[in-house]
Image (cartoon, rainbow, N blue to C red; front, side, top):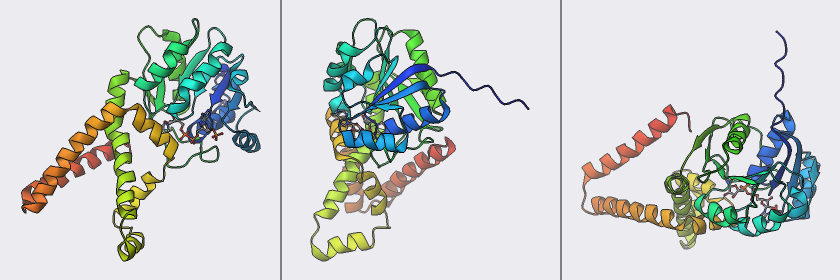
Length: 300
Ligand code: NAP
């Protein structure tokens, strides 16, 4: 059997602006197969991160100044916390070459379009994206090349976005192993509020509640944490800056889902208080059905 011909790189120069868990996973894939970009350049907030990136060998070049980093790039991917996007877009905008595609990986999409969209120069394309894959770890050491395998990547191109630019970013994520779907940004933010942002808010809160217990009870939380609490602590180990930015940049959808959740929690509390076994059992059964559906869709 002849060796399959390797695919030509999609881009000449890919610049990752921020190279933590997500950026370094893309970098690893791009460097390993060379099917995404002929050259990979990294920029970050600190020189220490860039030194580590070069030590790990996951970029061809590192450049601390974001403006200089993006010069001559045909694809720029913002991979920093979403709260940093506006300042980053301002810093890179004058240095973007005509025809370049700016994309991102941020977990909120309306805020990204609001903050970055108006700063994109004429002749440069903007294709917002969100790979729905991750772990609770951060930084360039945390990334791995299979992170996006079999996971969704959601694109939210604003109306009028160049079709070829959307196709190029779609192909980039396919080559990362993802399945790609296009979505309205507002719809994206509502869906992610329930599947990701609210669960994180609940996990952070429940850990705070446990933290606030006194003395012996607090010790026992740690000792017996295998019974449910431990799963929340994994989610709650996520990066505080990244999650602060997500909560503040998806405020409305998150608050709406939180209000719905609190109503449902109140209903459960009422059933517990008044001893309504049917209601309790039904609620748990509906949760189990969701879990079964996820297993069938291979998303666990
Ligand atoms: P991370 O591991 O914490 O890495 C963040 C990177 O951004 C670091 O390289 C950091 O540089 C850089 N950075 C931070 N602030 C910056 C600033 N003001 N200017 C320039 N660079 C800055 O984060 P991550 O988990 O990869 O998340 C990155 C993005 O992906 C976020 O927008 C997040 O919403 C999105 N996302 C995350 C997940 C997840 O599960 N983690 C999943 C999907 C999407 P230094 O190291 O030098 O500080």
